[in-house]
Image (cartoon, rainbow, N blue to C red; front, side, top):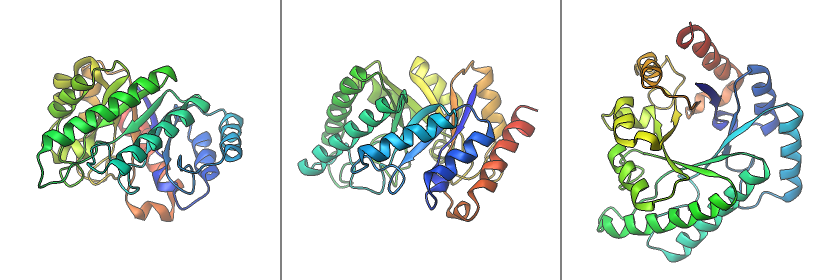
Length: 269
C-alpha cells in the first residue's frame, strides 16, 4: 500500500511550499488539489504549467492524482443548465489534458447533483452521459478517473458504495474506478468492507482522513481498523489524506508531519 497527501491545506501558500515539504516527507507520490491560485485548469497558463512540471521533476516527485475542485466552482456533472453542463465538460477536459502533460495517471472527481425538488432520474442520466464522454476522452490520454461518494448535503446522486457501483456500471468505462473517503463513508453509515463488497475490482483509491477531514488519529474514526481492513482485503492501491480544516492553513507543514508520523508510528508500527 502506498501513501500520498493532498495539497488542500497548502492553498494559502505557493505550491512550491507543498512540493518542498513532500520532497522531505518521503511519501510515495503527490496529490495536487486543482484550484486557484495554485493550479486552476480553467486559466492556468502554459508557461506556468511547464514551470510546475519542472518543479515536480526537480524534486524527484511522482504525480499520482490531480484532484478536481468540484464543490466551489460552478462545476456540476448533473446540472440541468446546459451552459454549466458544457462548461463542466470543458473543465474536466482541461484537467485530463493537464494530467497527461504532467504524466499523472489519474484524476479524481466528485458526483454532481440535480435539483433536490426534481426527479433524480434525469440528473442521473445527465451525469452518466457526462462521465461517459469524459472517460472516453481520458482513455485516449492514458488517464483513469476516480469517482468518490459524497455526503447528502453535497450530492443527491452518489452517496453510498452501492450507488457508486451502479453509476460505474451505467457509465460502462473500464477507466472509471470508485473511491472511498473514510469521512464521507462513515457519515453514510458505511465501512471499508462495504466498498470491497459492492465495488469489487472497481475499487481504486482511498481518501484516508478522520472525521470532518482531519488528520488520522485526531477525529475519532477507527482509522487503524480501516487500515487493517484494507490490508486484510488485499488492497494494494494508494491512500491520500485530505485535510480540509482551515486550522491547518496556519501551519501546514506541522499537519503534514503529524500525518507522516501517524503512518510510521501507528499504521506501520
